[in-house]
Length: 419
Image 1 (cartoon, rainbow, N blue to C red):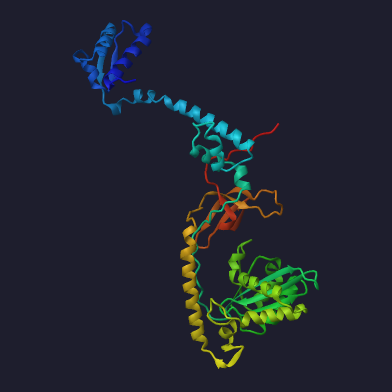
Image 2: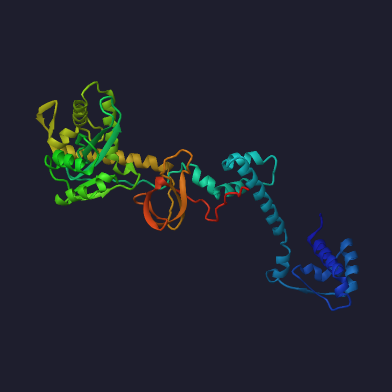
């Protein structure tokens, strides 16, 4: 409608009076308006306005001016278009839900590109909002976002103070059906011991640990392990208590929490694969010797040099252990800072306090849901990249890698009912 504002206002008054004529005719009528030009219709030079003015005078109304900020009733009634918008939104959601279920839960981009030509009124944001609330998608699809900034620091400690333990296996060999190895490593010098286990009971683990480390090397103050039954048993913890050693454990299903020994596992297994020694006991001993005698790029020397001041292949040269340790620490700090500055560029820093998150499903099965939940986060620890979740009434800690936040805090789209 190519009318001026005054024409539109005047036409609105005329149609309103005509609509309610049977009710208000011959009554005293007051018209409140925030358009002051309606008070001076007699002086208007517009022919349309003059014709409408003559028709309006049949009702003898009184025009009263009010400020726009006080004309709230008219402003509210003039926004009826919101109801139409809500209807369109409901129609869009109905179409999106139908195709999302029919096409077996595609991602938002693929679903939008499928629908945009058939239904141009559906927006990309509406599709993204819908798929982000779908519980089936949330529990069955991976989230490749890396949450939390890494802030690990190189621990400046003396040799032999902190050691790590882990079990390698089962390994498939021709001679043995199942082979398990006990791996012990000093976190400062990287000096390690690799011993074959007869079985993986806590008694056998405690025996080898005591004979091959506690009785041979300086007593550690802390021992870091995972949550294997051998390390959480009363037998193992009693052994540590008898030596006055503090037991540290990583988060559940978080091998990176004991990264030094896990990295050493990888190198040791590579050596075992490449070894041509037919006797497995000798092969394990050679692998362990190779690990302790090889130059370590993070230390800038060999573990044996840092632990015993001597090089295996040149025993006449006596090293200054304090100088080696200082160089090794500085080298690790530099590498760590460079690594963190690079890796944190692709990570998302966010807070999970009080939010709903899904947690990884650890049950074995390729067709089982990847995630369970959602569950409420009761504590967020960004320094250690972990959260405490209220998992079915129990507080359980999870690494950021094992959770997936609910992107929209509104209600989750339920699974459609099938008759």
